[in-house]
Length: 232
Ligand SMILES: [Zn+2]
Image (tube, rainbow, N blue to C red):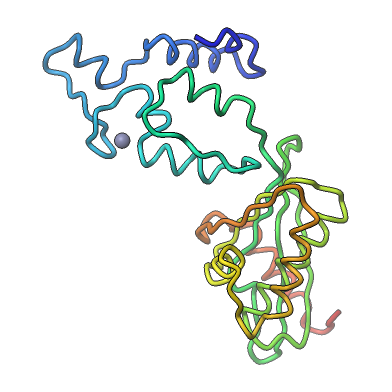
């Protein structure tokens, strides 16, 4: 067992939990089934045998949690490793600040105006910082979302943030950035985003459903509606 579990900077109950996981002392399905013949050894989410490693790392649900957490660089969980090795692989991973952008950036078709909003969360801050602005002459929601992403990256880079995880529920934009494909409508914006990305030591762009971006969504809408009589 990794002796560093007791020196991990976390709550005592989590240290105890990790120690029990390392000792195989968690009441997971396979553990219960080895002692109680009627106990169900299978994972309630996927049906595979529920070992400690499966519960915390290998189950598809656990993998999704590790994948979507804002680690920088992102964590990849190897298959078929025991708890000790898996724990060593993740215990020193660092969380990066995360940038959350809403979908559609509150675009007004008639006025060709968009409210842009995003939140910037830091592992060391108690609450996310909120950003919003309004821009005119915006012909489409895609351009509005691209501009919000570009503005947010520009501010994060200017603040000397070195590692960043970016979350958006605008799937078209995330796919284009991650695959390097071009969308003619936002060709210049994608180029700018690519250039800005190089200012970070590590940066990742992830799709996140709208329900997680409620704050940024409200920020964008407020910016748009409060701009009724003035445009930056
Ligand atoms: Zn499972």
